[in-house]
Length: 202
Image 1 (spheres, rainbow, N blue to C red):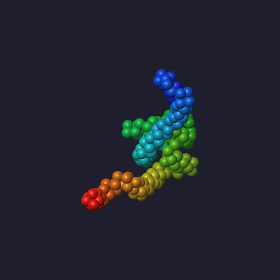
Image 2: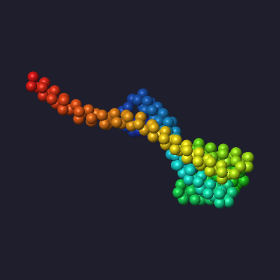
Image 3: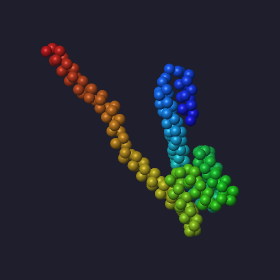
Image 4: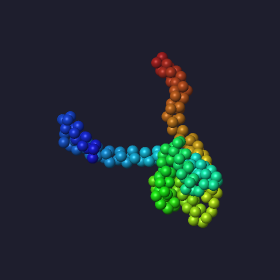
């Protein structure tokens, strides 16, 4: 609503535009006002998810160390949230919310699912599912974390290899637009000069 209002005020200040033109400008501003906030919000969401995704493996490694040192999962999350906040404020904040929910009496599985809902990161969803199954069946949490960390590293390596395989295709168009025209000029330039000289002499 703000962009059409600003457009209307500007059209009134800078008079001379036809009524139809003013309506078109206001409609265009309304479309931008509807699309632009969602576009900016999606960009911010992806940026935040990328930051969480990059710091998530370190948080898992710290949680493994805590659980192997004898701490419970709740105490381990508190320690990891405190240490992670020093290097990554967003990840520390999310883990701090999990700890706050646990202290408020929220079930551990529910608190972890809330973490998945807030972040929307697929890696965290997989960890929460693995931890939920481990707590439900009584298996070792440290072993579950270690196996998931290894699986996460394998998936990150596969993703890196996939991106590397796409690199050749992505480089094709920049090379075609930037490199080959200069190459053609260097190769065919002298030939065109000679042809031009011959045509002038004739």
